[in-house]
Image (tube, rainbow, N blue to C red; front, top):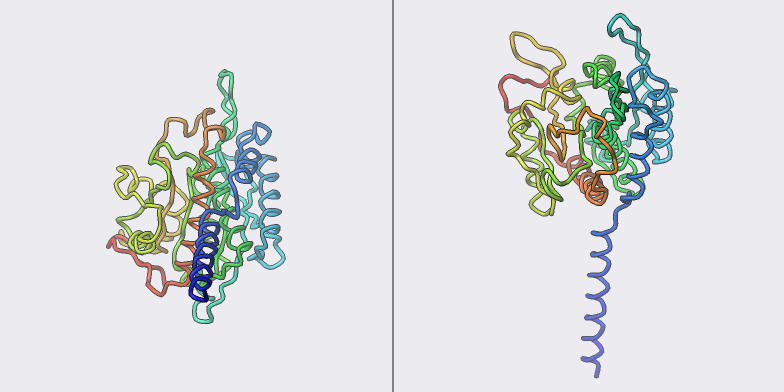
Length: 335
């Protein structure tokens, strides 16, 4: 009798344990509906394509600051309320812009003064001067999607109670579409020592899944650093896969905000900087920089899974003792 009761108790325990595990694996802190609301706001017609220097970019920066605060991020700049203001000149016009920056402090005494920076740009190219029926370049995949991925990761880490080893900087940049202005300004006026930033994870074009299939993404710069190899170790136990056969990935390494970190300055043909990569699910799609870049085309369930996956990956990377280093002799770490 007692043996039968024991067997029943074991079966019940295993059933409950498997249920808990299943729920943990399936539950996303940030769900598809929430991500869709963020995209609907950033890529709405009312935001008029988020051109640099526009009132809509001010609105977007205020909205992002509020979201960072709601998520529980701390401002990285003292008294800044998350905003890093800067000014630049383009086509003989002075433009005031701003980056939005927050931080989740690390918990490992040996690593908390080291940083991983997670980045995405939230600007786009505004409104076309042509006579087409739809003249607004909404920039849903480029790059409301990357911005929402960044925001989702920040919220997931905080609301899940995940504790990073290294400190995590979250930076939404303006000015990417006109020469990586925001990211270059950040690097030139970094609020932490650049040599303490171990690597940059940058997000672009994460809204579509039809290009690579679900649970797949690629990284630019696989030939430049060993970051992809480190991620490969993590992916051995994940159902997400880094695709390293994208023909244009090496060229795209030089086309997004990540390059502002890897190429801080160049001397005798050698670039000094910080290892980096851009992570995306689409490359060079026909809708990019066109009015057809709409959030209605997104796979939001895949996006929610991507956010949860990268949240866990970033925590793992923040605790990992392995060095992320350049493998291309044309690059060297800044010191």
